Length: 304
Image (tube, rainbow, N blue to C red; front, top):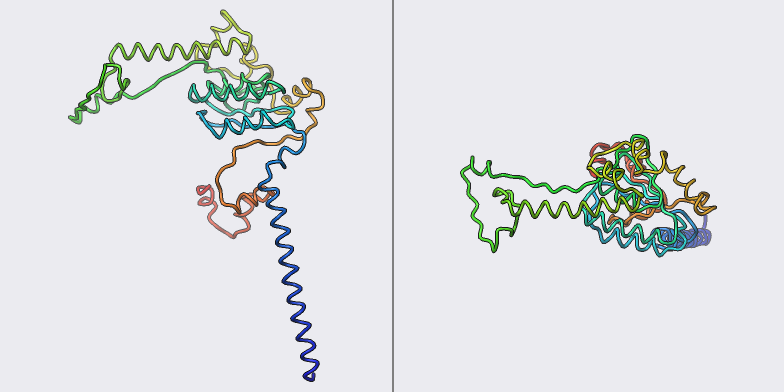
């Protein structure tokens, strides 16, 4: 091959490399735009009519993030109905009250159904009665309609260790109860009054939402728990079943809703950008762990 031919082929290789680089660059830019759309566009989730599913799990407490999300759901006119999936043993009275109010706001202009899982008791039941219809499994644990205040008494431990706690306070009711001293009768009476007042709120809410009164209400508002079957019998739950029954009820309230897609509404957790992007396009953390090699799966699970 002479010098002219070498120069010719070398120039062709340079052109091919430049062309390949720019093609790859534009493909990468297009891919980044597509992923960003799915990952960050709030309008994508609510861009079509759907049934919204919101899960209430664990201990219920006051939450700005939860209230904001449910407020967005209340304003989203594409969410034609709502399914609440509840698996909670309860929580704080204030947190349960705030959750109840947010759910009732949503229910002003669309049907809301609660689906109980393993447990929906105490504050979890407060969330359930915010719905218009309640579905439970036969062995769901529910009820526990009551209020409790607990605190430790460490005075015997301090005595054994020879420790005394000196306290200067403005009155005998200030900073009561305390684990460092026996509760005085006046403070005890005040705490009992607080619990009783909150219990009246809870009991009356159950009576209003479930149409119970008198002996019927007293028999369920005694702090006891019930299976789903017993809860249907005593009026705390409407029917046994799961999400299929919930969708059937929604369709009976608003024909056509039962055939709509179900979208999960959830609070976005802070996580690395790559994790958010891959999660939005359907690549799970489990999948990533499997393709990353023969790592320690137990350590991976602990890390999550």
